Image (cartoon, rainbow over all chains, first blue to last red; front, side, top):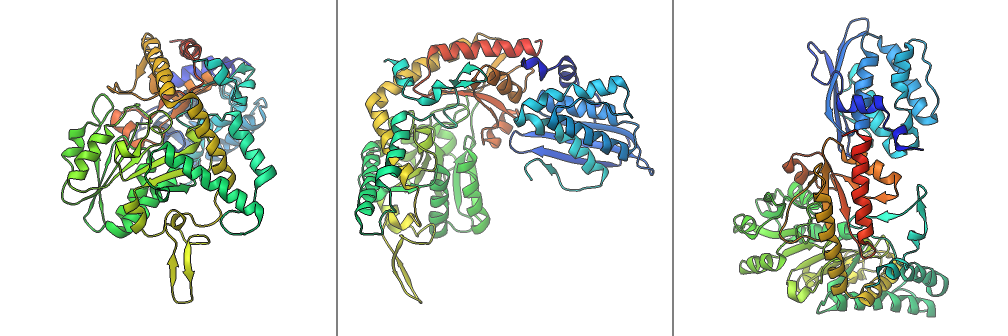
Length: 154
Length: 405
């Protein structure tokens, strides 16, 4: 397999120019994530309304192209959706990384599915799966009001 | 020197990685193992194995002899004066922990100072942190300069009457800077301050002579010296080995055990509680024989040649930033490529069978100082050739291509 399967154009684009990489205004929940083995760090900011809808989401952090692209794609995918729907999307996403399966999540548009699927190449690189999942786990932690830093090794 | 012949003694190079021949540039992390070392372990388990130092049967005598012969070989190799100065540990980390714990317990008190440097691997910081916490001691960090080295003045200005020990690396595992150990030892001895040297990167790539270096403690990682994992060595000057309290308690390290009192044996057994990694220690005797069959001077000369070629080659690529520019450099080059995270570099390299290390290399203090979260590191062993460096150079170009730089 070509290395381009991992570094697809969408991934490179989001890795180099991550969307929503800032501290969003009026965030009411946030959480930090850390992978101590490689040093990747992410800080997710959320504006969650009373109905648990993600009104705004953004992140700050540093890490490899995979981790930055995944965080960027996550913010674009999750923004405006209910937390429960977001958690379902994450389940499908994790399944894709594990099984290499295609994504066809009903609640997402075709474009959104394709964007998420750009990260499917990670499956062949077990050492990089944590890079792709760190921001997502940190998001769930933020939404659930966790205080501790998400640590990929715990 | 016939590097192809030397390389052929390492069975791992017969394997393909991702369908490509293995190019191994990660020896600072751990070196590969020559066949004589691998065979020695098999032979030991097949023909000579028994627990050592305990039973009186023939196998126990044979195994004990093989184990203790290795201690003699190490003593000779590092030019220690006494065999009591050679203590086997599970790794260099344990060797440093042993000193931090035993020396710290006896000699470090509240307000005392431990002097280390910003170049240290976590293995030469965290054990001292434990003593800092336990005793209320202070850790001072000698500053690393722009070249990625710590000069003697940076250490000199931090020495006070409270300095109880100086713990320094021999070669930085990030910048490759070779520390002026002898000068530091001379400086420290004026004030009778003991010096511990983390020799993980030094021992495989330099001549190590305890009489010339003059340090009080020297920690060695055997798996970085073409030896098995699970073996480290602590050289401790006899004056310290004699008086430091045991590190761990258990079988083998005792004198007499009574319900109300226990006495301990002398060094080295005092520090070697429990059954040790016997086969691996015996295997390490073959690593020393391997090194001596080539000659450490020849190894140094060869690695220097490849290192210079590597620096010259990769510096030609404008996207590459080499970390540090020490006047004296060991077989290590850490670098970044503009706009590409080191983990992405390592993954792209791996597709071509090229193994390097990416990350903070257990040196977060140094990376923070340099303002980078991580770096990529290529490090050399005796099996590397200019061809490997050409492959490294091509792989860097490939990274830029993949990332459309």
